[in-house]
Amino acid sequence: MSELAERLALEFADKDYAHAYMESHRISRIAAQVYALRKQRNWSQRQLAEHSGIAQERISKIESADFSSLTLSTLNKLARAFDVDLRVAFDSFGQGILDVVNLSPAGLEVLSRDDALDTLKTRRLMLDQNHEWRAVDVPKLARALPITPVAPALPSGQWARLG
Image (cartoon, rainbow, N blue to C red; front, side):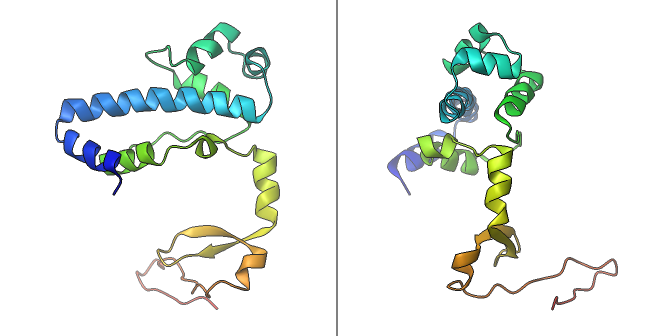
């Protein structure tokens, strides 16, 4: 485990510290991602304001993490402007620590809806060993180990094998 992850795991024994740290991380991550997505699309703050209907001054505050709260409405406007999905979820502090240590500039970029759908056209959906769907590049399928398809539970609680 990384040194940072080990340190956070110890420090997160203090509940108040853990919540305060992750709240700060969330704000910083949103600010960094809005900036990264804007730069990925080669937009100015003014252009993002035009696409989102959010004042340019507010965009500036969001990107500088100068906000104490963002409404879901504002986040939805940004998601629509960037043409991406917005995900809001509850998760464990263990996953939160992994998110902190794995944060990278490339990890903040997100393909637009059209680009993501174009990319999926060159992939096939397959079930992995954990029974989760994954998009696999078609050229890599020939080199990949076969993945056994599994059917969902039937109403009677019985399982059936596909194919």
